[in-house]
Length: 406
Image (tube, rainbow, N blue to C red; front, side, top):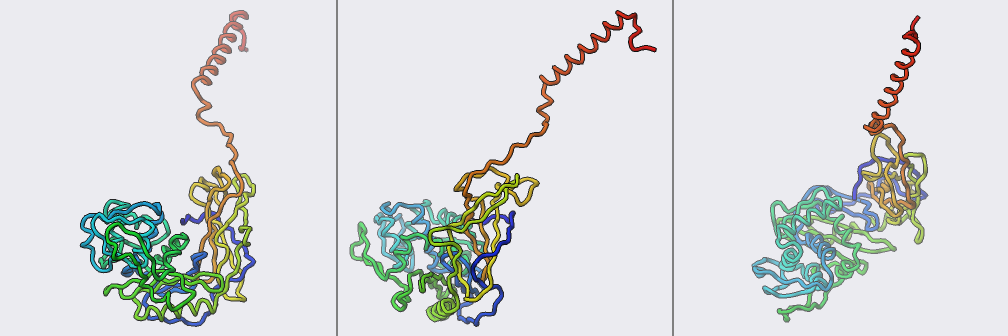
């Protein structure tokens, strides 16, 4: 989630990213490409990564993510009418055929089944159009700003586009799910299905998995307008990188160069310990210090010998409001997400959730309000004034009207 910057506390970290250092040049054939850290989302390198392009079957990463988030593994998905009309890559679903959500993941991500994507869309949203709207909503929630999905499978559509950076953001989110990671690292898997018993082996189209023992995903894509697209993942030296190439002339060579470049230059630098999250403090409206923690990310990537990084704490809308800036003004419960830590490191910024480590209740303001001038108050005042007037008249009669005269 992205928050509007409100509280900015620039602090030094005992770590070593670099800012502005010249790095060896990296050249790839793809017009759009990017390398990010799977841990933090930190951008290590990019090339025209915000230009929307046709994603082809890498679209299915989002479809699979929604399948995981919206369905139980044992939930039954039934192929709708017209399923055999879905073109190109297919798992050859029959109308009315039933497959579990768990097995459908292998159809989507290994076989790259366009018909499976339509079945998932119909099951979750009732139609392809409604599911595309859900895809776009989820993309916005993740912070994607150059994405417009129009179908669940990536078949060519002039308005179905996404940028390399947005594709990397979605892939990173998907890789946070163990069931997604378990599927995309496989070369083949046997599924159960209710009708087509002759087509039960889902074989991955990701040729790179057989060439690189460190590879653990993710998805290939190709159409004539999109060219070769690839979203890759590899884990070496204890950390995972995600790469994206779009409309590449040589996607395998591009991906290999990108991994070699990043793993040669970058090392992990801890933001917090294995068991102890990073801690900081935020200031409240009455001058108190509220402890704040961040559990993830635990490290970021930077070359050795680089300068210390900095971060700032950005409060979420509603946590800070009114005329007092840079202070927590709202009631906060321990464990509540109150904003984000924004880190500045090599390649730009990345974020981690800021979580309150204590309860806080702002002080109550004691001010005279309009309610103080209520009807009962006015009546009492009127009675007292009237009594004083009557007593004065009585005294004037007793003393012959001479009271108060000269």
